[in-house]
Length: 271
Image (cartoon, rainbow, N blue to C red):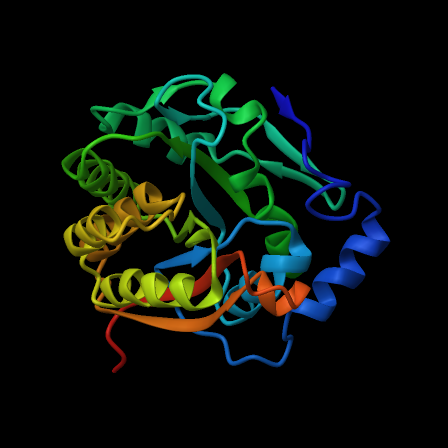
């Protein structure tokens, strides 16, 4: 299965040279690299969310495999979907799926199912790949799409992912792909997003879900983030760092209706 790019030319340039130039402007080659267990990274058009994704990804020490979890924007396919074979293509080249890890996660999980349909038109995983390819060409991918369910399911999926990683003794970084508040005035979006970010920095998935519900935070990828927090705790995650937050208004100058973006790194306790 070759999964071709579906938002190249829309969310980011389809020209390899233009794409590289754009990512170069949004990343920092001189950033101090940190050991990361996981990452929260946005997935909008690069002109809006690219500086946030780029800032966060610039700060991590790369590993051989990235598990990227995204929400289901399309509603297609299985609700908890994993691909364990194939290749994802972007204008910068191909990324092979880590079949060994993917299949181990699949056999470990009570909820994930092998499925291609959920991934065919879902952009939230795809837009992370060119940023990763900019820094490292030979990494592998495990793509996972999560639809709506209970917090208990999200947390269990995270624990199962961590169990599979530990069983294979793999060097892995987990990315939760998510934008924050959608289409609210800047002040409202920032206020709500601060509440969600605070819960993520506390590595408290239950509190994040509570705030999303009670404050009506239109954060599309809270499911992947809760699973990430759960997995990270199992893998020794002790603290999180907000690398950058901004909104689409910082690009357009229109603060009347914005989308928020946060780049957050989860890591073990510094020695």
